[in-house]
Image 1 (cartoon, rainbow, N blue to C red):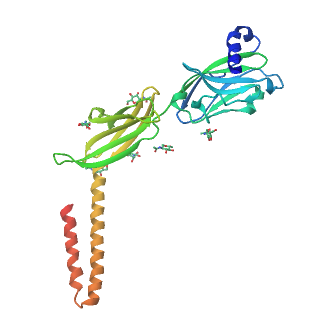
Image 2: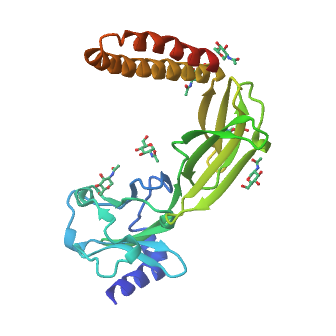
Image 3: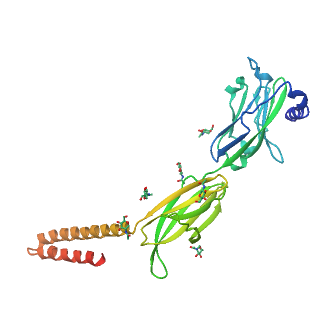
Length: 290
Ligand SMILES: *[C@@H]1O[C@H](CO)[C@@H](O)[C@H](O)[C@H]1NC(C)=O
Ligand SMILES: *[C@@H]1O[C@H](CO)[C@@H](O)[C@H](O)[C@H]1NC(C)=O
Ligand SMILES: *[C@@H]1O[C@H](CO)[C@@H](O)[C@H](O)[C@H]1NC(C)=O
Ligand SMILES: *[C@@H]1O[C@H](CO)[C@@H](O)[C@H](O)[C@H]1NC(C)=O
Ligand SMILES: *[C@@H]1O[C@H](CO)[C@@H](O)[C@H](O)[C@H]1NC(C)=O
Ligand SMILES: *[C@@H]1O[C@H](CO)[C@@H](O)[C@H](O)[C@H]1NC(C)=O
């Protein structure tokens, strides 16, 4: 009830009180990242000494039904009427009050926190001001994946996948090393997570023989932000690694045969031929495959 009365006084008598007691805002717009903390500020006149028991502060969020964010009533914090949207995430920095600063800290900012806030202050007069909070989520890191596939025609191909999340919806642009646009060959899907973040997955299928650079760009038009991931696709590297596998495999077989041979040598006197014979066999396999 007292809260309502306080609001009523503030709103209806605002013209009278304006000249006597003025609340100021150093900043009217706050733009913060989803999940971060924000501290919004209102200032009010305090002469040398703050009489805390005379100070009342209300922070509220303007919506169809106004939501109470924070209340200090005659020097005492009161969380009983705080809206559940904000529970556990709100702190008013007490140490700044004596400087005439009402600093409201919202931690772990959510998309639903975006909107207009009023700070109403009563202290030997009353006044209020409005600040606006905007929440964004940049596509910060892109997870890359490369999968080798065999197309229906038997060609070996690579499927490049870029995944990220943010807000709002980003357009995904694919380019090759020459900045040629390949987006029309890509497949991009969008999914909204429980946290309202947009989960974006985009795939591009390329020929496995290609020795080229590819990049996926997440273009967040509203934030005017681009986040890029680069794939260095190298046919040469792949051949090289296949080579390593073969040499490694051959060496492994060789060691096995040697061990087997040593064992056999202990059992039979003329087992040497076994290891001698095995060597060219392994080399043959390697030559065939490369
Ligand atoms: C955000 O605020 C919470 C609670 O006050 C705190 O635990 C956390 O460390 C803050 N995070 C950052 C990044 O300042
Ligand atoms: C994104 O990067 C941040 C820091 O750079 C890291 O803390 C976070 O775990 C990363 N997220 C994912 C999904 O990799
Ligand atoms: C995109 O995905 C759909 C369904 O998964 C598939 O039919 C289509 O061929 C894909 N397009 C491209 C360009 O890969
Ligand atoms: C982001 O990338 C797109 C496509 O390459 C480009 O048109 C746009 O200007 C870029 N925006 C920024 C802010 O770099
Ligand atoms: C891709 O290659 C370029 C130069 O060829 C290099 O600068 C870049 O670091 C490489 N990126 C990755 C992810 O390997
Ligand atoms: C790929 O590039 C590497 C290094 O630039 C080069 O040595 C190799 O021959 C190239 N491979 C193909 C298949 O073009």
